[in-house]
Amino acid sequence: MENKPKDTFNPDRTSAAETEEELIETAAMAPVMKQAVQAYREIIASDEFQRLERIRADARRNEAAALGNARREERALWEGVVADKDAALADKDAEIERLRALLEEKTKGHI
Image (tube, rainbow, N blue to C red; front, side):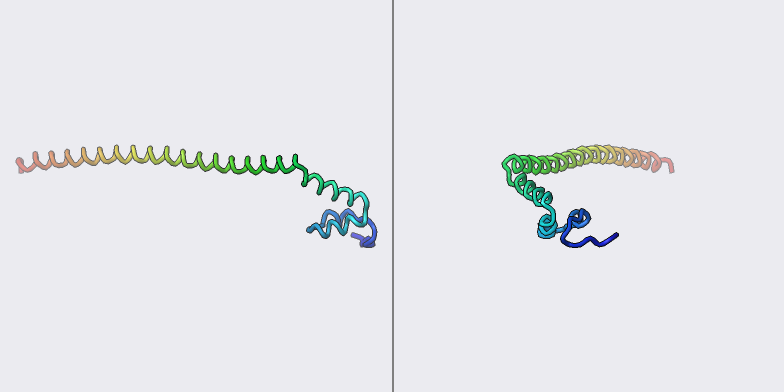
């Protein structure tokens, strides 16, 4: 890539600007860039832009809350399923113990 003189407009420098100062420095070299920076500042300062940013922020928070609620609901559902299975297993264990005791009682008399 060829090096362009610093006092001419270089689109590569514009896209590589990482700070507002670098962008302003680049804008000083091209009137259209200066106009673009000014338009950007006017837009972000506008009430409409601020309103839209609040809506976006609210939407992000609402989405995060909805995801959190969905996770809690799903967890509660699965905890219920696990509790039901645990209860069923406890019933089976109790039945096995009852049958084991009955078998032991019946076999004691035949030995």
